[in-house]
Length: 185
Image (cartoon, rainbow, N blue to C red):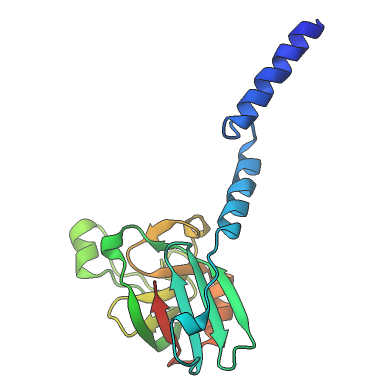
């Protein structure tokens, strides 16, 4: 009997070390969240801008995090994000927030309609892919916005925009005036 228990323990240990297959799904999700959180690459605003302006955002599509600094640099915050699905959908460079909207409506772009002909206009609400708040960038059809689908955060899941949890976009929305400088890297 003791020999059987030893083999069983060895089998369970081997499965656990082989990628956590023996772990319940909730524990695997917690482990993935820890890995995502710890993989944020630290950014320094001086590496991207000469001044902080009215506020500054650096959205890092590699580590899937948005960095925020207020005008005097005393408030620095990190927000986990969703990022574009592919490099072709990813716009990189400098822009700024040109408009903000609580309860945005959504109209698919022409390129989205080519790929997904069933898409159609969506008014504000729980099914709207822009979530509860949107900050429009100087580039047409590129936004920093919320999402009702929390599974998207930390993943390549957008058609070009930067997505945040609804609670986090509401917080960031209050912090960022129109004119906030933005860099997507």
